[in-house]
Image 1: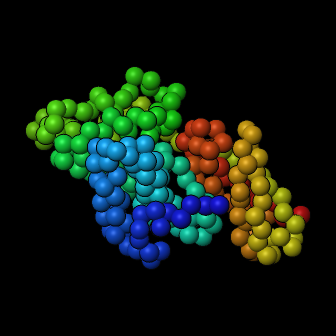
Image 2: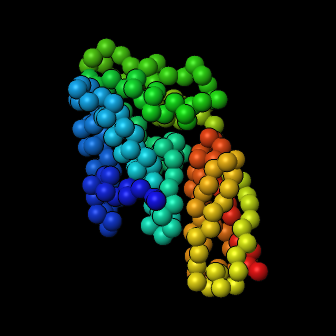
Image 3: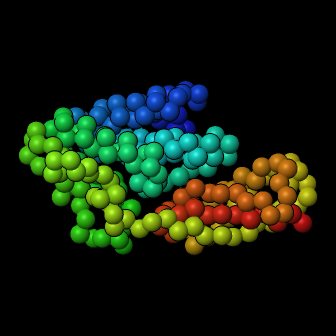
Length: 220
């Protein structure tokens, strides 16, 4: 079952992009482990959950797919979209402005970094309480592309799924098996041979790597 990302962020399904962004940043501050010292494990999970939700709903293209097909992305999506990456950077500045640590992000995003640059750590960008997260020379702008430049860029893969004429006309949910993982593929009604269904960041689930799975539909 796909997660209800709207419920996780506490916004209605017709929420504006601005409201979704505002809810994400508010919840990020609320569930920071430093603000939940007696429930740090729980807070970590909640923090991870809201980042995963925003990674999908914060990107108009991923949100559209989620609304239509119910497919889910991965937490690493937050780095791969210019929409969500910028907001994540703003969230980190929020944490720094509130003198909250962010080394716990290593645990949350560790899988995203795996196999890219083992020496990278969010701890590297920490500092004394009250010290800004990012430091730059006057006029120099810092962004996540500078900080996370080593993160492996998405690489899409292609595959095919066959459906019957009846399934094509009515729509159907099929199961794609890849590397021991089962991925649900919702084929919309009215597809024809050659139609492509995109599973956003599904490679994160099947391969542990960023990238979409593009499924070519074959009607038989």
